[in-house]
Length: 254
Image (cartoon, rainbow, N blue to C red; front, side):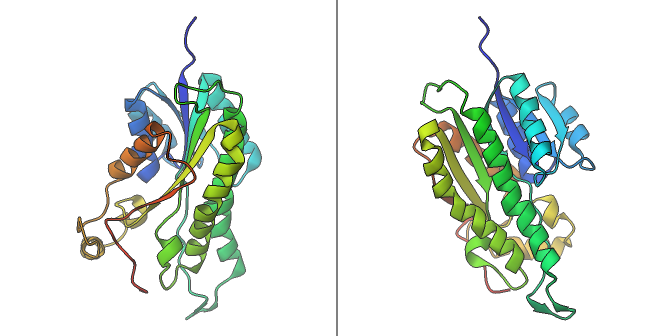
């Protein structure tokens, strides 16, 4: 009898941290479903990653679309890994030059970063609960992405910090909820990483931002984030934890 493939779902997998995670998981032998928006570079990303990658267009805030993506993953084999990297970082002060921060803008950031993360988590967990335990006793592992902004929110980051703080806060509770199903939940809180969110900045601004990191004094690499995801998957005692990946950076107010 053939052993079912081990499948991973990566939300936000078409670029940045998610793409690096997808590449890492493929190297370890997984089949990967890239969940990203219809207008993302998901098709190109899947082609670049090769035959063990598949793109499914979906919005993480839409329950039916996430359910369809998870169903596509389970058709390939046992869904054992789900990584949430989808997010937005729309800036805005509570009281800015243009007036009060629009409630719709705050709600959109929270919807994508927090509600979207939970949407992926809950649907993936339901699928994982049907798996037989692996050699470590796990039925699945869910890795979420927070940010050091959850703890060191800067000027203009009120929505982003709130959304990422919510992801950090739900980690332990979700891990405890899912412990009886042998599903682990771990969150990574990255610092300043070289992703498309920072790509639009001038080179000087990017270098200046990297120089604020104590050591190593540079922007983090997506591959370094992906390496930590791989370690989380391989270490069964990592559960219910939020791990800062930031080179000892503590963000200044601005």
